Length: 590
Image (cartoon, rainbow, N blue to C red):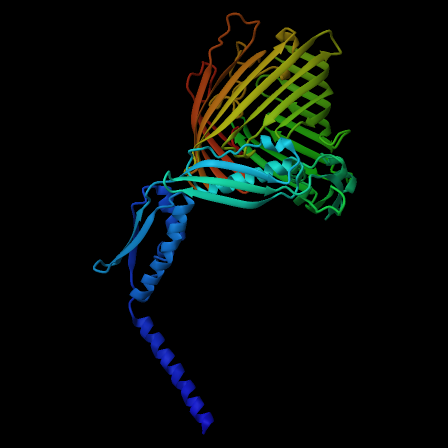
């Protein structure tokens, strides 16, 4: 009997719940619109809307007015916390509901009542015997807005500074915030526990498969016993990732043993596939072109990078083999061996050339690299009635500064590159110095729509020999997709009576682009290029600048932007045959 009674009660509860659920499903939801009044700051209003549930769940209205009220009541302390985090410690927040509107209108009324400012900001290092730490000064300026995120940023900035000064495990011991409501100011005291001052100890590596451990050891930018510096660990981590050998890399300090200030470093990596094959095609004023590339990033087991490439176009056929050995004599040096051969048939000349180069490159910082070397080049060059052979020994010297945010699609930063080489012809007494430098600058103009500007300036000079004694394939030429768009390849500069480009010993080129990327896939470019090449021997030659302008489309892919440009010459001379030029390739123009 008791069992039947329990079963009857259970069925009654289920039926009651089902009927209640059906009734709630049939009841209309309380549609509403929410707004903020009195914030006076678009950024503050945005922060509130991103945090408050009344705004975040506006498209999911509650079933009853009571549920809406609970939603609003829960948001009031959230909004007060946001206001305090932005320095509005005396702000008042209230909400009102207009039930007569359809949908219901919810209004949050905010009275900020003045934004507090930072006054005294103090740093204290507990138990510190190091007097140099007294030189660390707060970055928070007196009178600046008392925004909580700035105090957290200051806390993190100090921790990073301490990690760079030999303290691997500092931490914030105490943060004291004192309000002066009369003056609406905030005093901040940050107290840090430094931990022990440390030096580097042993290192351990995990995750190696085919890469030799000696390779990691050669690349280390520190020696055991050197003072600890967290930036060296970050830089080394980025360096390992930049080799292409590893898919992931983590370089982390470990607590040292008791009684010693030497801390071990744990290096954890995962290796990538060592081989890559790439194919590419392009189109420009010289027609279609194609290239193929094969590379091995660990050829002998110690990070040696071997790369072979093949290039074909309607005016060029060439191949290249390059071997780079990292850690040559020093951790930040590389030895580069380069062999290439080419056959070129542009309008200016016909050239068969073989070249071998050996260079030592040194990375002084992540942004600065320089190198020097020696090379030999044999070439057979024909131009007009001239048919010459050259046996050139050359000594290249180069330097680069590169702090672009992205190599294929930069929107901020700069890239400066300069190269000079002394050439000596062993089959004659001629010698010359060929120099070129290029600067590129990128600036974000409007972050929201990813509007940016890109500027390029290139200068070149050949000195020490008459231009007639400089091989035609070593002279400067201008015009084409990588130079002055809108003009035919090598068409800007001195030319013979039949229109054959002669090249010059002085070059000037410049470009400016306005780049817009409103979406994730497509971008748009407007550009103006200019420049000239001239020859010191031609006293009456036309040295006027040539200008080209055009529009471009960018399709952003996983491997970089696909570039399509259409250019028009603005002031061509009589030798220019085509008035519109098309260019298709991978990557930005510069």
